[in-house]
Image (cartoon, rainbow, N blue to C red):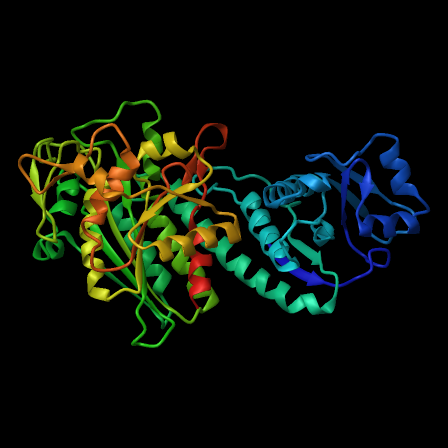
Amino acid sequence: MEFNLKTSHPVKLRSACLIIAVSEPRKLSTTGQIVDKASKGSLLKIIRRGDMDGRSGQSLLLHNLPGIRADRVLLIGCGKDGDMNETAFIKTIGNMSAALENCGASEAHAYITDIPVKGRDVRWKVQQTVLKMSHCQYRFEQLKSNSSDKKKALRKLTMNVPGKRDLAAGESAIEQGIAISAGISIARDLGNLPSNICTPSYIAKQATALAKGQKKLKVTVLEEADMRKLKMGSLLSVSAGSRQPAKLITLQYQGGNKKDQPVVLVGKGVTFDTGGISLKPGAAMDEMKFDMCGAASVIGTISAVVAMNLPINLVGIIPTTENMPDGLATKPGDIVTSMSGQTIEILNTDAEGRLILCDALTYAEKFKPRCVIDIATLTGACIVALGKIPSAVLGNHPALIKDLIQSGNQIEDRLWELPLWDEYQEQLKSNFADMANIGGRDAGTITAACFLSRFTKKYKWAHLDIAGTAWKSGEAKGSTGRPVSLLTQFIINQT
């Protein structure tokens, strides 16, 4: 979809569809008032008779409005001005997208910057419009024999800005919004693919394809033999029961100076998680194809960074494998030695994400990182604690956590910090090894992060648990692409 900016008078504008905001109770935006005057009060007459009162979720399509050159005028309800916050604005853009999908126009001109959002400028509104419209237009139909008809879909949206001084910031917002949206779509595609297609080898091929023709991006793929040489016994214990070979994928983007320390992203890539010998129940097990969404978010983020040509060094590390039951699969009670030399008693083979991440986090030391952020659909306990609105963040460096939270608030991909106190480490005690891979029923998200913290002492580190935010269930089942926008905004802020 094409996005543009323009400063234009709504009455003189020729467009297939002119979009105007209406708030409660029956209050026209500044642009609406101009159009109403040109149409000799037609808009106010329509809304006063009850066809549109400005409630959130309402829309009304008008044809051939007198005094207006646009073919259609689409009124979008915004709710009460006092209730218009970031969430309400994004919801309004979603409602606008749905209304445009059915109106028959291939292009539209929106006066959405008229909508007042406290503390947010034109640039933010433009970027959020690009992100939300792109998200709403996303379809995963690669594996359907008959795709939906897109002939009448909206192909171009022009957003009006108040003055020429807003154009430069708005154009930058569009550029970033398009790059981030493309990265989100890549992550969603990878997440939505079934595990018989999206195997560790497939992810490695996609990462390699991303680097093709990109001078600043280099991809390397380690095979299981390479991992054995590196003594990655923890990672290999997860792949032992699978016929699909594990891969350790590294994407290195050099946009900064050679001596600059890189930001390192580590993404969990379990392409299907049966739980291994600690087999999961059958209900909703199909959703375990989403257990590689951390890996998908790393690829999506790097794609966005490459598209924007950001002046920063960035490394993505993806440990990827299946977790399957088999005669060779790791058993509860087995003890393995990680790359760090620390031994792990595996009490539950369904706590496998931390087992592949810990070796990848040790591997990250070789890059002498500025900071390391791991992203993983790690614990069901995170959903119990926080639901499906924020992702959880924990780590060993308060300033890094603060920067991540601020980046999430900036782009509306929010985080909530959980404590990482030493007292929780006690739950990982083992009678037979340096640590157990689970800490019992209590504080599951925190003890999982405690486990990872034992492999991150040599650098600044944060852990994002995206178990509740990486995908949706039910009628809207599918990958969300989170937290690509958060990670990309964080990286933008580091430049």
